Every structure is written in C-alpha cells, then in structure tokens.
Image (cartoon, rainbow, N blue to C red; front, side, top):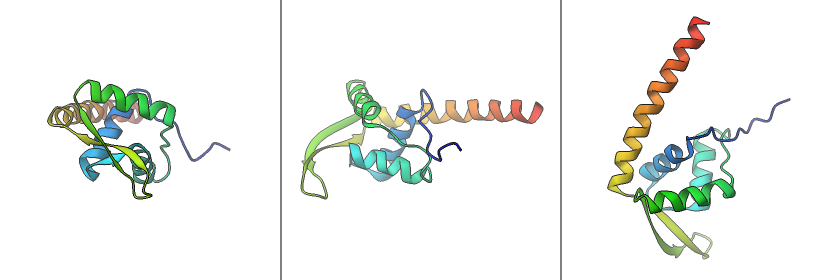
Length: 111
C-alpha cells in the first residue's frame, strides 16, 4: 500500500514555502515544514535536505529575508519572512500553478 505522505512535486517547493510565509508570517525552517505538512493534511512532507537549500536560494534571490531569533523551545533559530519581491514571485507562481493544474484537469477529463 502506498504511503499517505508524498514527496513534493519538482518545482513546487518555492511556491509552498512562500505561501506558508505569506500566510503565517515569520517562521523558522522546522515550522515552515510543519505548516506545509499540516496544511496539506499530512500529505506533503518537506525534508530538511530540500528545505534548507531552497531557503538559502530564495534568500539569495531576495524573495525572503532571514534573521536569527529564539524558537518556541528556547533554541536559537533562523526565522524567515517573505519580502515584497517574494510576494510578487508567489503571485506569479500561483498563477502558473493554477494554469498548469487547469490544463492537467482538462486532459484528465478528456482522457
């Protein structure tokens, strides 16, 4: 039997991370992964090996900013926030995602 958990589709990690930050505000990496997992009804699990390089790339691209802070467990953690450029990227990626999923739905209905 297939696992209920699925890996994130190629190319959707930026979209999911930016959406989590747009909705929840400042979050550390573990909280981002947890938010996505919870919001997807436990279907999308983001692995650390994928998440942290993606966060670094998004910070380099200016889509998110980061600052050190203290987590809810009292540990030092890096907190991420979406920037204005990140919001524009999120809007663009949402539009593209909706167009692609709409196209796939048309093919599935046709087939």
